[in-house]
Each structure stands twice: as C-alpha cells, then as structure tokens.
Image (cartoon, rainbow, N blue to C red):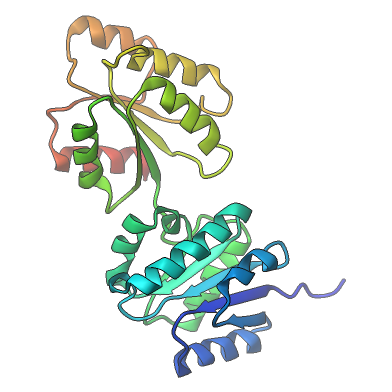
Length: 258
C-alpha cells in the first residue's frame, strides 16, 4: 500500500522569504504544497482535492481593510465547501479577526513565531479530524431584549464565538440549520419571550434529534419559585439570573464547556 501524500494549499497575501521557507520545509516533510499568491477565487476550484488550506496572514492583518476584504472572500469560498483550514498570524490580530469574520474562529490557528514541529502537529491534527487548534466554542444567545443580548456577547466574545437570535422560533430554525453546518456548543436562553417562551423552546429542542444534546442554560430575570420549578422539570443544564456579573458568567461557562 502506497504512502498517502497530503495536499496543502498555502494562500499568501504578502509573500516573503519566511513563507518560502515554510513551503520548502513542508515539501521536505513529504507534503504536496501549492502556493497561492493571487487569484484566490481559485480556492473554490481546489476544494475537494485539497487536504488543508493554510492562510498565511500578513503582519498587522487586523488593521488592513484590503486584507479583511480578501479574507472574507476566501472564507466564503471555504465555508461553502466545509474545507479544513489553518490560519497562521500574529496573536494580537486573532480576537479582532474572529470578531469581524466569525467563521475564522472555526479554523485552526498558529501564532507567529512558531516551531515547524508545532505546525506539522497542527496540520496533522486538523486533517485527521481532531479538535481544531484554537477553535472557539460556539454559543447561541436567545433573548428578545437585543440590548441585553449584545451586552452579554461583548462580555464573552473574546472567549467564544457568539450568535444572537431574538425569538424562540428563530432559535429553532437557526439551530436546525447550524447543527448541519457549524454546530452550536451551548445555548443561553431567556425565560420570558413573546409567542414562544424559553421553557417551550427547551421542550422543542429536546424533541429534535439534532438539538437534543445541546446544553441549555437559562439566563433570565425571572427568579420566582414557580418559574424555576417549571424549568427544572425540563432538566436544563443551568439557571442563571441576569443580575449575574460578567466574571461569574465567564467562570460558569468555562466550568460547563471546558
């Protein structure tokens, strides 16, 4: 049986001697490496025949609008085909890029400077299907108060990828689609919402195979004995009041998700 040669495509927006060195070392390590320095629209054509796309980001990537535009285009191409991706960039740019281009938080990440052994390990880990290095857990906030939801997103966005919906049925639709694409790891659910309230949303989620396993935490201003009793019969994964602090919420999420 022959040796399987992994095909890598390195997309480079700012070519350098360092990038050339990475290409050479990966080739020496036995990878089939293709360098893409322009015409990034070709990424769609290369999908399906490439084991991993590597995005080699330029310095100060988060400060360059032209780089951001190209990255968004690349990520759209990649997102359509569910390709495996590893980004290489400066650590100081990571959070800002994740905030502006949320799909990037699902990619692997290696910060410069790095050792080639670390790069090779990250490549093999992603190709073999292990948890992507640096990937953030994804949290969905379901709350009909967009002001509060946005505040919570600001609290936790550096640690998690965050989406917001403002109605119960929107949550169901969003989750059924997301679980087939980029799965949600936890739901922060308001109790009191018009039309379909939080407990009803939880009931519907538990009845669907695609969503039954997702941890659901109530994050609500409703703390009456009757309300809590109604929810506990549905066995959520937690119940927090909106009066909780940012630090307490982050600690709670870390305990639940890590």
